[in-house]
Length: 295
Image (cartoon, rainbow, N blue to C red; front, side, top):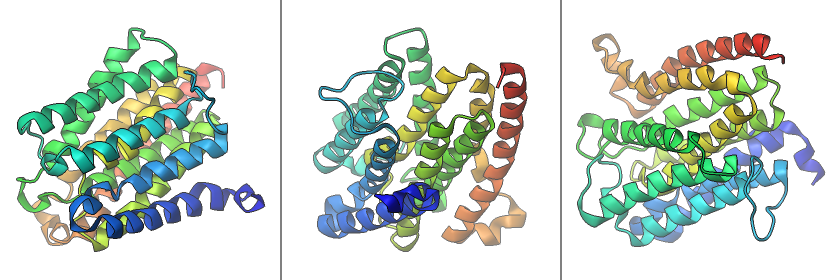
């Protein structure tokens, strides 16, 4: 375990290679069917492993609280994989409710948001419905923009992964500004895990953006955000500013950048570039908040 004492291994290389390797194994094992829908489980597994490195193995039975990320991540991983294998997850990504699978999927998405908030905050307070609503709008935005029937992005997981990767990196930066070391490490590890799966998606366009990567990558961001804002409420404006990353696709839709945006790697790069502006503003807000928050 001495190898993982090195932050470069524990926070960056470990999650990135784990998500990439596990995603490739799941993709090959599942073949052209479930493999392309559940390969994103590599993100959830890498995030759960990173959380376990920070907080240790969850208690049996699991108990709620701000450090209960491992059990919450495991629940999201199980729900996502089961649905994408057995729940006809092909409709995932269209932003539409296509029959009972679509209704079930959105029910699971909203229930996961409410459940994570209640689990980490140790109770159903007034914050839970607010978190659930914001979580639902976030997923809807990702699904709406990158649905199956939307222009050149049809069914492509790479673009929403770029947004989630930048959002996780932004959380790590504002956590560092607030001296929240565990949240910083978890957010950066999640960003590395998403980057690892994005590398696989870059070479395999058939990978889906179904419930598994939504609860693995997006769910990880949700959990870290809830934990951070509960520990340091002055970070709420900074976390809210990161939401503008969800609109970074407007950059490659500009006529002047159309040539770059015609390529998948170009869209990924432009989203990452556009995401740096909200991250910089969020970091500034976090530093200002930390100055007034007594940190």
